[in-house]
Length: 478
Image (cartoon, rainbow, N blue to C red; front, side, top):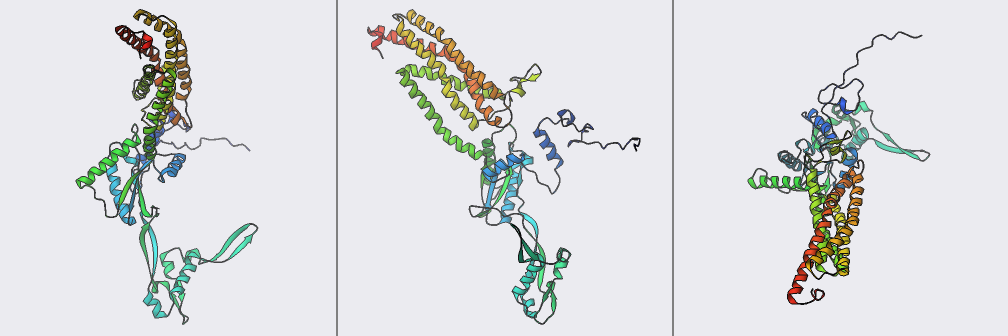
C-alpha cells in the first residue's frame, strides 16, 4: 500500500570548514565552497579548525606524496631536522626548542612545524619485590611465568587447517586483566599451597615511556618537521632556518645539550647534489659545443659568433622565468579561457628541472647560428668581396636566403613546447619547468638571425681593412 508522503524533517545544513553554509545538494564544485579555490585553501582551513590543545600539525602532503617523501628521507615532510642524542627525553626537549624557533623563521609555514612527541605514552610496569617473594619462598621465574600466562598468554600448541597455521594460547579472561586492580589480584601459588595476590609480591605502576623508538647510524633520533611558504625554494628556506638557529646559538638563546647533534634533511638534499653535478656538467656541455662548432667552421671568430646565440637564448630563458613571477604576465582571457590558468603561470624557482631545460636549450639554440654562418661562408666565397660595400652585400644576400630556414627551426621548436607548457596531471610539475627556459630561450634566440650576420660582417670588415693596410690579399690574413 502506498502512503502519502508528508513533509519530512528539514535536512541539516552542512557548513564548510570556515562556517559558510554549503548548498543542500553538497555539490563539490567551487561555487559551493566560498573562499576555497585550491587545495592550499582547504589545508589552511583545516589548520585553523584543528588548532586545539593536545593536537599537533603536520606538513601539507597527500598520501602518495607523503609515501614518496618518506622513502627519500625517512620523514613525513619535505624538510626537517634530524636530532640525535643520548636519550629520548633529551632529544624531545631539544626538538621542542627547535620547533619554537622554526616557527619564527619568515619563510617557514608556522602551522606545518611539528617536533616529535617521543615520551608520553603510559606504560604499566610490574616491579617484583625480591624480599617479598623470598619471604614466601617463591622463585622469581615462577612469578614471571604467572604474569606471562595471565597477561600475554602462553602458546600451548598449533592448530593445522590445511595450509594455515594458528597458535593456541591460554591466558586469563579479559575482565581479569584489563585494569591495574585486576592485575593486582592475580594469584601466585606459593610452595606451601597458599595463593598470594600479585600486589603483595610486586609493585604495579604507570610510567611515561616512548611512543616509538627510532634510530639511525646507531644513535637515537627524533624529527622536527617543517614546510616552506609558497613562493620560496626549499634550499633557500633551509639556509634561512640554519642561519637563524646558528644566530640563536651564538647569542645564547639556544643551548645544544651535551651529546646532542642535529642536521637538516629532506628533498632539498637532492637539489644540492644535483647542483654539484650541474656545476660540472654545464661548463662541460658549453665546452663541448664550442669544440664541435670549431671543428665545423675551422675559425674561432665564426665559432664565437654562433656561440653568441647560446648567450642570447640563455638570457631569454631567465627572462621567461622572471615573467612567470609577474602578476601582470598573461593576465587576460581568450574565448573565456584565462591564459595564466592555461599556462600555469606562477612563481618559478630554480630547480633541477630548470637546469635540465637550459641544457636542452643549449643544444638547439645554436641551430639558427649554424644555419646562418654556414651559408654566410658560402656566400662570401662565391661573391667578390674586394670592398666593404661588396662584403656587406654578400652577407646581406646570405642572411636573406637563410632567414626562412632559421625561423622555421625556431618556430617548430616553440610550437612543440606549447603542449608541454599547458600540460597538467602526472609529471607536469617536472615537464613545465623544463619547457619554460627552452620556450623563452628559443623565442629570444630568433634575434640570432640579426646578431650573427651583424657580427660576421663586422669581423669581415676588420679583416679586410687590416689586409688593406698591410697590402696583403685578404685570404692571407688570419
